[in-house]
Length: 68
Image (cartoon, rainbow, N blue to C red; front, side, top):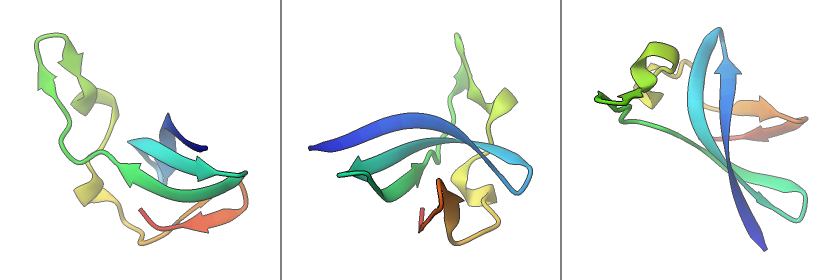
């Protein structure tokens, strides 16, 4: 079974809205949200940064190094 869970991740001082892809206890990858809605009831740009602002090529999460 593959599980995808949404998670806010703090990377180098910036907060990113991410989806973490897991399989058998291993993190397979992280998808960082690129387009943040900022209209009507959606104001993600207040809290989160887009993936274009991500300063690293790999993210360490739970002792595993993954690439977004």
